[in-house]
Length: 391
Image (cartoon, rainbow, N blue to C red):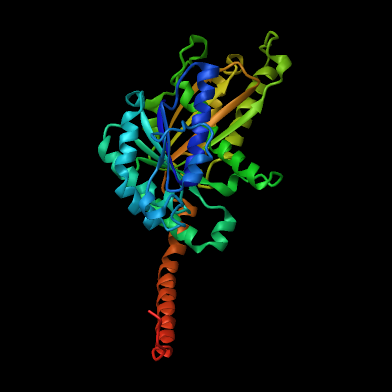
């Protein structure tokens, strides 16, 4: 599957940059293209300068809103981010249209943090504009939710998140929800943590996108997961996870025994990888709530067999009993068994419910504070009304 990837704001741009990185990896390691166009859109010039993999020309790193922000961001005011996105939407549309291999792509993936200003405001607006312009291509959004410390100290992050996810869900074909908090590693520094989180968010897409674009016969699965399978799976609120189980390197070149112990070990490794994928889902959810599911098994071809595929299917059916399940295999010569898992069509996401509930109480609170501030200013002006001015 080939994606046009567009990141909005600082967070969205950095994750889009990781998609550009895995595309370089796919070209060098597998001679295939998975993201024919990757773009970063921002109101802050410094954020655009900090990217590493997206092309540095103005068509791929797109600065918007310079007349209103001077190239210094919108300060978490997502209404301003949305206004700028409306005014400068033509810049983004023209850049997409000018991409050399745009028409080879199968879908769009638009990315932003829900708690910020530029990304949170621009994501739903440009999702709507692009969706209306390119009606034949599915459009998916990836929304990065705030860290716990942001939710506890920045009320605006909660309000922005509720506004963003409600708006984008009305126009996107599917919304990947990514909870930043689930990816934190406490033994990393802040900078390394953020870089690692962005890598972990993007990594599950690598095999998933490569499988359907593979050209070498020995790497094409018996049941390939391609763009059609993915597009038919993705709808509404969506989560993605990835897990792996190591295969001892010394076992790979040796003849495989066909006894029951070997067979049991192969199945166990697959189940371990599926377990990890479940535990590493991008957002906490009730798996039984999913209406659609997809899993991709990637492993050395000797590690894959019909019994393993059946066990994984039965396992997923037990977890998501109401879901339409699609699956595929991707034979790769590596030292581990990997499972990429998507659960889609979720209808009861607790995190979304929390944002909506908290924002409902915040809106009158914000209004009350504005009225109190205005009242204090009027009182202050009244006290000083008899003092002359120098103007």
